Image 1 (cartoon, rainbow, N blue to C red):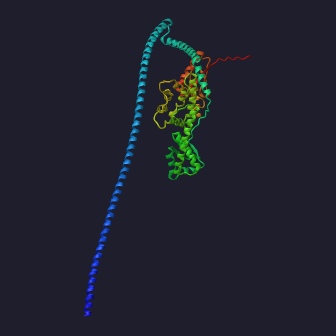
Image 2 (cartoon, one colour; image 1 turned 180 degrees about the horizontal axis):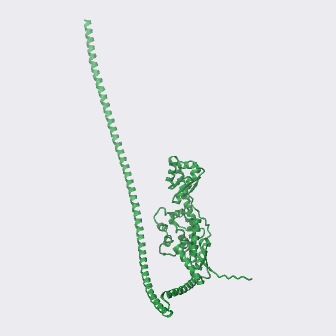
Image 3 (cartoon, rainbow, N blue to C red; image 1 turned 180 degrees about the vertical axis):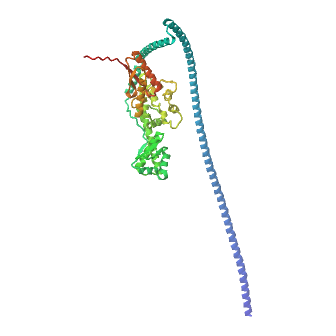
Length: 520
C-alpha cells in the first residue's frame, strides 16, 4: 500500500508543481507584458516630446528665415530708394543747369537783338552818308572836268592820289595825337599798378611738370611688371586707373593717364614695387592703397599750405582738397596751384591800390581756376565747373562770378572779376611762365617779322624780348613821321587779326635820315 500511495503523492506533487509552474509562467508573462506596455508608453511619451521639440525648433528656424528674408528685402528696398533719390538729385541738377543755360541764352538773344538794332541804325546812317558823299563827288568831278579839261580816268587817278596822301598824313597825325593823350592819362597809371603788384609779389617761378616715365634697373624688370600671362600689369592698371606702356625703349616704363593725381599715384606705386621687388596682384593692391592714402594726405597738406600762404580762411574741406589737387595739374607747363597763388597775390595788391577789399580779391584770385581740379570728372569748361563747385559750398557771389567769368565769357558784374582776369593774364604771360618748344618759338618770331616786312616803307623788322616787342626800321625816303605812326598802327592790327599770342606785343617804328660825306 505504501508503494501506490507514494506514487500517488508523487503524481499529486508533480501535478501541483505543473499547475504552480503554469501559474508562475502566466504570472511572469503578465509581468513581462506589463513592463513592455510601460516601456512602450515611455517610448511613446519620449517620441511625443521629441516631436514637440522638433516642431518648436522648426517653427523657430522658419521665423528666423522669414526675419532674415525680411531684412534682406528691406535692405534691397533701401538701396532702390537711395538709387532713386540719387537719380532724382541728378535730374534736378541737370534741370537746374538747363534752366541756367536757357536764361543765359535768353540774355544773349536780347543782347543780339539790341546789337542788331544798333547795327541797322548805323547801316542806315552810313548809307545816307554814302549817298551824300556820292553826290558831292559827282559835283566835284563835274567841276574838275570843267576846270582842268582832263578826262574821267585821269581826273579820278589824280584825285585818288591827292586824297590818299592827305588821308595818310591826317590819319597818322590823329593816331599820334590820341596815342600820346591816352599814354599820358591811362597807360602810365595802369602799368604802374601792374608792375608794383608784380614786383611786390616775389615768388619762385619754377613750373613743376608732371612726368609720366618710370626708370627701371634692367629690362628683366619689364617681364616681372607684366607678370605671368599679363596678370601683374592688368592688376596694376585696374587698381590705378591708368595705362602702362612697355615698349622696346631701354630702362623706361611709361605711365599714361589724363588724371594727374592717378598718374602720380601710379608712378609712385610703380617705383615702390620696383624697389621692393615683390610684384604680384595682392602686393600691387596693397602698395596702391598705401600710395593713395599718402597722396590724399599730401593733397590736403598742399591745399592748407596754399590757403595759409595767402591768408584765405574759412574754406570748405572739399574746396581745400580741390585746391590741393591743383598741385598735380599743369597748364601750358605752368603749375596751376602756383599760378593760383600768383593770381591771388596780384589781385589783392591791385585791389588795395584802387581801394577795393584786398582779402576778397585774394580769395577770388585763389579760387578762380578750381574747376581744373575736377574737370576730368564733370562735363563743361573749368570756369562753369569751378563756379558750380564754389556756389555749392557757400562761397560769395563775387568769388563765384570771378571763377565763371575770368575768361571774359560772360558780362562782368563785379569789379573783382576784372581784377582776377587782369592778374590771370599777368601770371600767364610773364616770361618763363609758359614754356614753348624751340620750333614753335622760332616760327612765331619769323611770323612777326614777315608780317611787318610786308608793309610799304618797311626796310627791316626784328622780333626781340621773346616776341613781346617788334622793332621796325622804316625808310626815311618813303615815309614821314605821320605815316610811320600809321605803319605801327597797321602792323598792330595785322597781328591782332592774324596771330594768337598771350599778353601783348609792342611795335616800335624807327625812322631816321643819315647823311654821309667824305672829306678829301
